[in-house]
Length: 489
Image 1 (cartoon, helix red, strand yellow):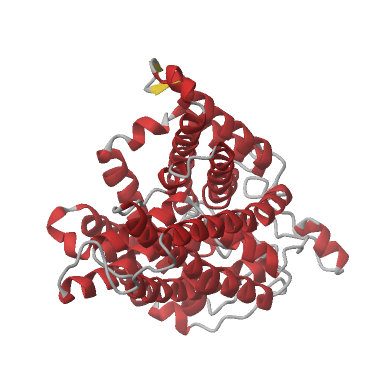
Image 2 (spheres, rainbow, N blue to C red):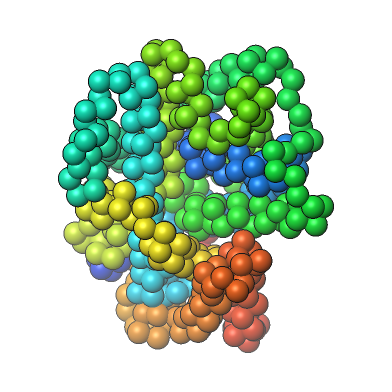
């Protein structure tokens, strides 16, 4: 039901949204069909991937033991849980996606700034994640069918024939799923999250059995000093916050489909502190088991599965890693740019069209070349990633402290100069004055080698600085009496 239809149904004066600001996908969600399990499965899809497995396993190699990894990541996921609830509340309460939520603080046109930053990051990582999954599939295929080695002898645009085959297969499968809209996304993630758990548990049982069911939870293959372990413990928290800061920023894209706040909180609880921590600990235990069995820490699950030596297990492993990456890609790297690009030109770009643009762009940037270039990954994507914390800080302070949770939903789709969220020429200058210096600071901390000791905390520092600065700039604004509009929810 459109905003105008809702107004007519309640007998109020019909509001006509500005066509430059709305379409069916950006309007408040009318169907609230996502349940606790859907949100729980969303987190399973997002967490159960090669990147998180390798990240957790890498902490063991760096010098932390299993218990230290467990406590640090549990603390990190609790903080993420709280942040997701804050953003989730906004989406569930008002039913709008991230670019529309951004209009509250950045203005109806200024919202394109955070939306496009988030979209570019997502598109790049969409391609990179698909490429990494294709590499894992290639490892499985070459182990199962050695004759395929001849497919790796010649390359085109930096990728050999086997690589192109695996990459395009995953690329097409994802496009087919996401091309059917958000309901298709919900059904797919409900399947892939639990399926990956079964395979991971089977892998853990196999490794532990090979290790004689005895692994050390207090030792590490690379012992370091107590001070270094403490630094790594806090650094792990900072890094996991930065990793999930992307989805924390646009979690309202999913929570907008939940029927109530309780559903959001429960889905997040089971999906983040409980499931996410359990998965990364299982990853560390499997890695510790690989030390006992093979005498070295194997942090890549694809390489570990390849050591099983059974063709059917290898095929199952290839399918599992493909599904895992498709799951995290669709959740973390597709939904956001689909909405973000729709926000730029709502009259021509729908959610599905935005998604297809993102998918094609992820192919055209040849992500294997991006990933092989450390400068691109570290400076371009890392720099943009550092911007996400300040964006989160501005949006949270504006909604909960300045606006006190009072939002005129109709005004989010009003492009007239006297509209509540038009600010100055459609942009809120205070949001920009806050974002630019805090984002610059976060990027410097994240990228300049001199600040390497605090680089892991760049997201947190950027968020905090932006929150304090925006609060200071809006201290008089907060004191004004805000009279809720009829459409406020």
